[in-house]
Length: 273
Image 1 (cartoon, rainbow, N blue to C red):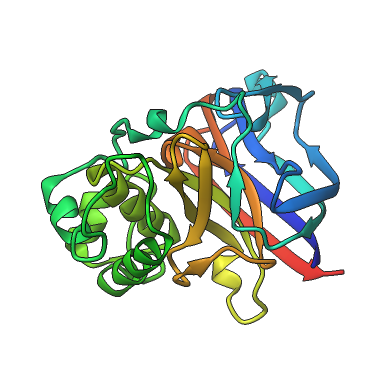
Image 2 (spheres, rainbow, N blue to C red):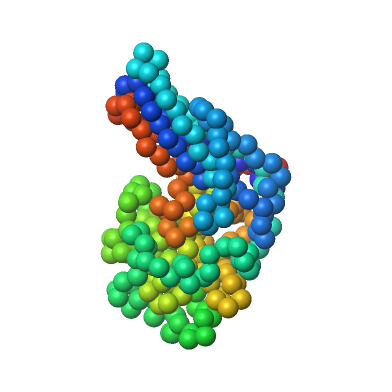
């Protein structure tokens, strides 16, 4: 499926903006599940590109202004076309971190005894030879979707996996974090994926998140699971970036000086070509 995407982030400030340093994880890359036909980024200043430790394509820019400039608005645009292939299972490139790296605890997706106990209802044991059963992982994703019900605006970007699990509600980001944290609690490498999801009747999910879970550590073989929909990823999914959790690959992260109160409006449109 060919999808055309446009992602706009509009910042407004109550006082003049004096300084800003922003890093963007807004560039999808071609891989087993997709081919990027073309992609462009726009920002208030010149963008500098590089790759992070997870192989993501990232860009950064710096804005320096004066109070007399009275800059109270900035805009970041990302747009392009991606041909989705619907491939859910794949093998990592040797240059990417070893699967065992994704067992390490992180603030938003830390292992916990409560999560391990829940996970063992679906995954009877983590194989000692570094493999995981796909059917059990899909059952686990369904179980997480059942106990962490999707509810818009019920959490924020600082909500941890354990907090969302105990609250029983969250958004796709939280469901992905719970999946990652449960898998890590069971000794199964897992990581967080940011991306897009096309569904004409689910515009709130245009900005989406899911999880990669390692099926075979020795072979570096992974599977991408959409916990919100309790399914493997398919042609509706566009992979954007990956990391240990949301903090490692947010769409935009930065610091600023001045600007007073900040408001942000995000608009994402996805249309089949």
